[in-house]
Amino acid sequence: MNPTIYYQRIKNSFDKQSFMKTLGAELVSVEEGEVRIDCPFSAGLTQQDGFFHAGVLTSVVDSACGYAALTMMPENARVLSVEFKVNLLRPAACDKIIAIGKVIKAGKQLTVCEGTVYDANTDKILLKLQGTMICIQNE
Image (cartoon, rainbow, N blue to C red; front, side, top):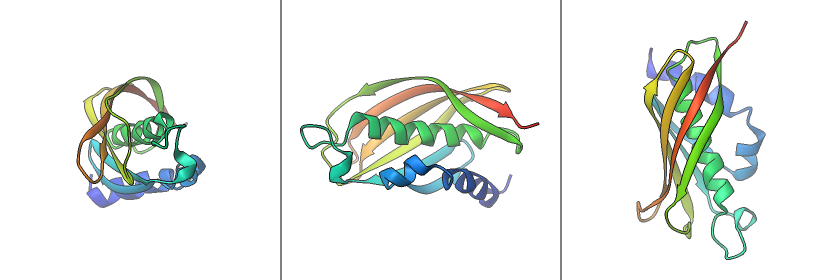
C-alpha cells in the first residue's frame, strides 16, 4: 500500500480522538508497521512532582502502537487494544515526548506491538510498552 494511503487512513482516525486533542498530541509519521506521535509538555499533563503523568505517556504510546497495528490490517478494519504492559524507566521531565509504536508480529486477528517513549531533547527512553491489538472487522 502507498505510504500516503497509510497516513490518510491513520490521520482520519486520529483526528476523531478527542483525548489526543486534549493532550495536544500530534500525529507525526506513519509507515507500514510504525507510527510516531509527539506530545508537548503542558502543566495540565503533570503529576504531583511536575513530570508528565505516566497516564499521558501510556495513552500516547498506546495510540501509536494501535495505529501501527492498523497499518497492517485490512482497509475496512478498526483496532482496539486488548492488553499492554508498561515499564516506566525514568521520570518524564522534558518539554516534549516522542512515542513510537512498532509492529512485532501481525496476525489476522491479534497484532503484537512494542512502544517506546523518548525525551525529545535527549533521546533517552522514558517508557517501554508491549501490547496486543485486535482487528475489528467492519461489517
